[in-house]
Length: 316
Image (cartoon, rainbow, N blue to C red; front, side, top):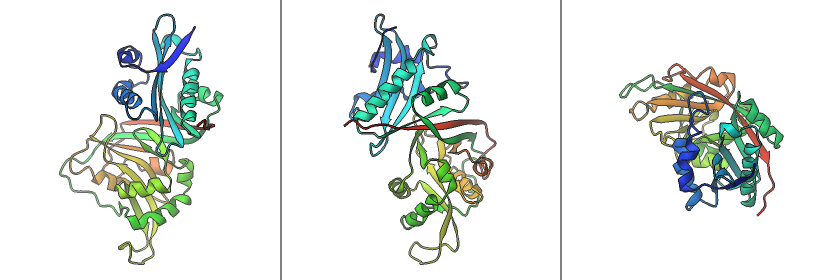
């Protein structure tokens, strides 16, 4: 079988989507992101994003797709959306797409590539490992309808949004956190795992996306009182893809009980903007056991993922 892997074209959409409908037990998400990925790959973001399609050379039949995007800063790449028509699985097509995505990332200076694989998808795990990827972290996703409706009284919580003066102590907490180590130093944005480094933390604090809990007496940032951070959550209130009604906790970390952080997140739903809350966090028992706390209803959906990563050689 002779294949051609090329950049996606507008007219590929329907043929590709025809075999991207029942990938998972709940369906698939490619129909929700195809237009965005295509626009990024063919517009002003084309240097940092590419939507690939594989087709048979003789017939032109579209049989597979994938997407690669450079992470902020350009030093790493995110691989996603690998789909192969059922008639062509286990024939090396996914590996060919993977190689093309790595080549794209390397030519643009990326030194690392990452992707997630469901923990029950053994075939994809083996494919990643055969190609030099290693599982560096394990994550869990939980989703539920908001228990408290619009106008409800916010639940009490000792958490608060971090301020600029909290940057050093929050970063210091992360550096000593075993959960941060288990997370491979990542957080999630639109289902892409990015480095939660000091620069990212500074930006997220400025955007009021970081909530913290503290030990010791709290006060103004310049009060001089001894304050130690003992937990934090990164909270996305902007939704993702086509979902603006979802509040997401995209990183969660606590040295004791994360319930205050989850209660704080759920209290942000009181204004009625959100109908669901997602928690995406490292698969650590003290975090996952606390998920139903403080306004987060009984878990309705959950899934676990392995985060794979590989060092690649930049080819600028």
